[in-house]
View 1 (tube, rainbow over the protein chains, first blue to last red):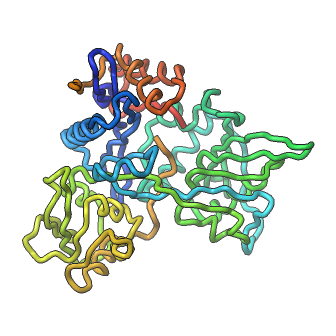
View 2 (view 1 turned 135 degrees about the horizontal axis):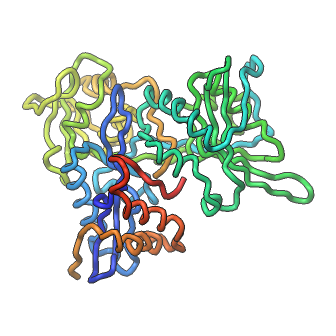
View 3 (view 1 turned 180 degrees about the vertical axis):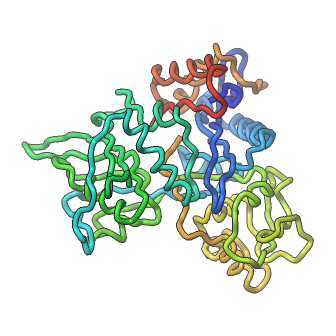
Length: 363
Length: 56
């Protein structure tokens, strides 16, 4: 991370608060946009309730804008913090806490391909092309440099294990070609002579449905474990649809990736749209007034004096931006208002995506 | 209370990173701090866009 992406609040010569951001590229529907990956946010307990976080957030958003990055994204420590700064839930995370012994694939045609454990060096060669192939078709995924892979996703320092064993790298090959991979750890446990271990999945990605099924067959087939866990499985829920007993997967939803439209015009211009008929959105944004007002969105993108179809806050537009929530769902939750008949349906058609956004990693 | 808002120097970075751990009430992970502080000290040798990861 470049040092100039770190910002601190100084009380004399001592830091009282900090924020920083990674320079990412984020997949958006039909394209890619630069995004500041906000991280390391914290204010000392001695300096809370004094506007330090707000000042850090405002200055950081100005900095992100000056860098020409239209988006800021983050994973929140608490879900009540960042809405006030214009961030909205953009890619909800699906957590898995499955009973390993209850898993069976529905209509299972039998195994295909082969899984093999590889070392970190081979993983560094084989996994990134699979990730890039998945990423090219999915909003919400981050660019990864070679160093991000080797020093982050594939790295395995002991102090990251938190009671689990070493990181395993499993490669799936079908017809001799790489088709998927899984990164995971085992938390080994025994109770009364009975194995009670857990598989903790760091990441499992595959390029096609049959490969997805094979990855899950492998992960649920690991011996001496009773639970298979992940913080972020695919929110399109292929696992839910593939499982013979989906209830015992114990899937749950949390807020996941948050997104801030820093430069609304550039952000809306970075993605493509699924319908020809544009809509006029009335966007509220008290914090960044340059974003506020009426915008025609779709085959053309411009400020507008026309009557608006839908009114919403920039926070809620962020929830529609990657395709996580339709405008009709936002309205059902009190997050958008239809101003012209059919406006919600037109906006929903325009922003529709084939699959929900997926961000498989925090940062 | 008047605070100054600025980017830390490379020498100040480790102290800044410990602030985040303190804000979360956690013990600082010195290995990660050194990883990141070291990367920032040698940032000129890294190509643009290169990132060093703290945790995965």
